[in-house]
Image: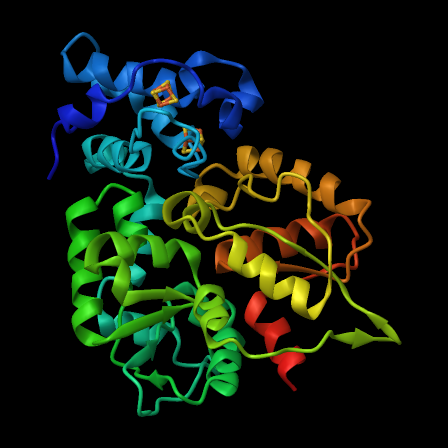
Length: 348
Ligand code: SF4
Ligand code: SF4
């Protein structure tokens, strides 16, 4: 278990403040301690013994972990890693939220994850010629089993194995960094070759632990296939589609062009204002910080309202759930789907 921050990672921050405008929690509060720079200052105070670590608890929960502070940082601060360390240092024993403990239990082992999807109609197991394995995810297989089914339908060359557990992103982001790393390595062993995932968060975590070359997120993978797709028509018109980035896919792996290129091919694409900004799902955040999560997504709903979209496409199940719930609550007819579902419509 990590008890200290990695000093070299803390040292990288030059306190320039370029990250402040990019940070959603700083935008919400305008408070220095709710900014990346402010949190790093607090981490340093704990590291140097000038402050009790418990004083970091509130900010360790308030931070979305969206990593929007990373691409704008001129010093290359790996804030995402510092946040993982902060939660590992703090979220132990009584400080670990009950919801997190429950989630850990649900996906603790391969058989538990498999049990989760027992009654879900996910992609059926099959052995294909290529060395590409479809990742079924843990919560995705329960909430959106049709996503893996759709990908398997349009890509007969991929293999599907039921012998797979959770990738450990949930653990790494919620105070069990080492276990999260081990789970990624185990999944890499269970699914040899390339792992194809429909979840941006899992793509980033897996890449960091088993190597970028072994992981493909759906939109980047499909782009490489160079399949010509036609525009999707509904009621005599080309569908209007917006896109919500996955924070970890964009800020961690730099993938944001690929889904847009794909969507421009198959729809009348509309860029949602601040599509790169977090939707407030942020893994377990929507469960742990309900009020703040709703504050973050409220701005998204406002941005989407006036665009008259048929669909919002996503590349991460957490975003799908968050946006679908928020749009429904506000009475919008816009449907939220995983990008593969639109690709499947265009490929018909
Ligand atoms: S932009 Fe980077 S170096 Fe500057 S304050 Fe933020 S984290 Fe520190
Ligand atoms: S991860 Fe997101 S919420 Fe947290 S400090 Fe960075 S930009 Fe702000």
